Image (cartoon, rainbow, N blue to C red):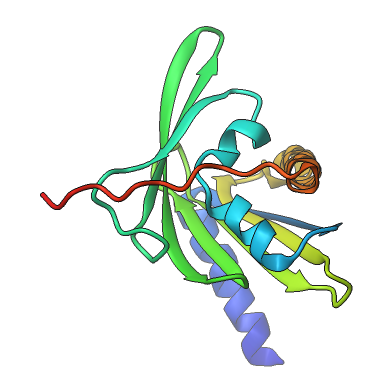
Length: 176
């Protein structure tokens, strides 16, 4: 017990030194679809077009691994007429179980973990967890925004998957 306390105290000290603190949120939702169907949607770069209002294009970065750690997805967004590019990298995955990604671009560290759990009745429970580092003292204000984002993303994901959306299979690029 004292070790946990000392560890947390050390983490808080490190956060103070860095001027950053963690903001972590998660939410789950049941989807009336087989786990494989949900997985296929989650790993398709094109799904970003249906999940984010500002996304105008999303694609795999050519010549990065596919469906394994190191895979990169490029997401182009538009905000007030200005385009921005974000790169998301797969850190770890277990097909049909979980996908851990991190945003390589952005002002702060952002990790996203998507976990799929079969419900036994042909459905799937999906859990989305976001963890990011924010300016010290702002996590309390940031968490509600992240919670809304996660809930909205899950609701859109459920609506898209349950509507039967499918994306064309990507053709492999020729070797370089």
